[in-house]
Length: 267
Image (cartoon, rainbow, N blue to C red):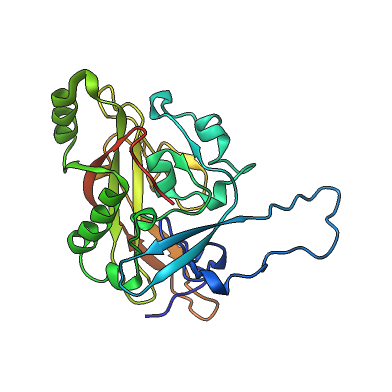
């Protein structure tokens, strides 16, 4: 399996994206220093670093991540509001490219391209994406649970039942997890969508496709009312400059989860 540089990933840090690849702490140097004077219309953002002790896989040790802005925690109660969500961190003028679908799903803009489980010492690797939607989804969702997310079920009815049981104590929002297992030329990936009316009918959703801006429709342009039956197919185009055929990948729905407000930590 070869990781091609032209492919776009939604949740994982693409293998060719060196800005967001975790590094062994001792190996990190000032790789992004700017020696030449910036042009009048340019602004350079020097990242800070965040270190995390990884216990799984065993023997990984300390990793260092680049962070391109302060962590901003939003409130899903505001609904679909890209301009103000997390102080605009998901938009082009700020840190759009450094916040992925997991950051948007959790409504926490870390500007580290966060990964499920990483803040808790669990590191997703390419081996974790080998298998089926179910087997890969089990791993990704279990790592998200380490961060504080809660498994809910596989239908909108499950969400409504969870909400009814919680009653007035419900504080947070629902998310949906989609999985694309690895294949030839494809590393494997995950994708999250966020419910923007978790206090209501749970039929208004939005999503952030990797480094793109947030939208309230699926990959086919259809308004998101139920991620479990939405279209999550992507035409990636030719994977490299030598291949003429276009690569098409699909994300299969795996589960719904709940993001308790103020009780989730991601990086």
